[in-house]
Image (cartoon, rainbow, N blue to C red; front, side):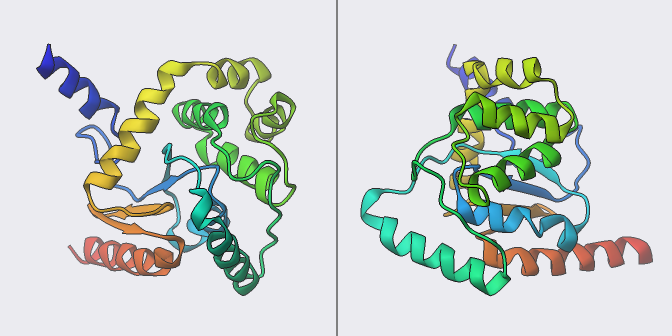
Length: 208
C-alpha cells in the first residue's frame, strides 16, 4: 500500500517533466500571490509558449505581510503594472486553483489564469466568489458549469499540493517559478534569467 501511495503522489506532482510531455518551459503559479500575477503578465512575452501549472502554496504569514506588501507594490511600480489588493488578503483560493488546474487540462490554462490574476490584482476581486470565477471562465472560453464543478472538486487538490511539495523538495523557496530545460528558477525577478536559458537552448537545438 505504501508503494501505491508514493506512486500516486509522484504522478500527481507536476513539478517534474513527465515522460510523455514535451520538455517545454513550465510556469508554476499561485493565484493568491501578487508576484505570480506580475510574472503572468510577462512570462509568455519573455519565454514564448509555456505550460501553466497551478500549485497551492498557501497565504503569506501575518508576520511577513507588511514587508511582503511593500515589496510587491515596489515591484509593480518598477514594472509599470497596476496592483490592487483583493479583499480579503492574504487568503487561500482553493476553488480558483482547482478551476485553474481543470482549465489547464482543457487547454485553456493560460487564458484562465491570466484572467483570474487580473481580476484579483487589477480589480481587487475575491476569486472565491462564484461570479468572479465565472468572469475568468468566460474569458478563457470555459463554460460556467466546467468552472464551478472544478472549483468544488476536492480531488484536484492532490495535484495542487503534490506539485507544491515537489517544488519545495527541489529547492524552490517562492512562487512563481519557471522550469526551463530541467532547471528551476524561483521568484518573479528570475524570469529574465529563465528566458536567457530558454533562448540558449533553442539556439543549441537549431544548431544541432
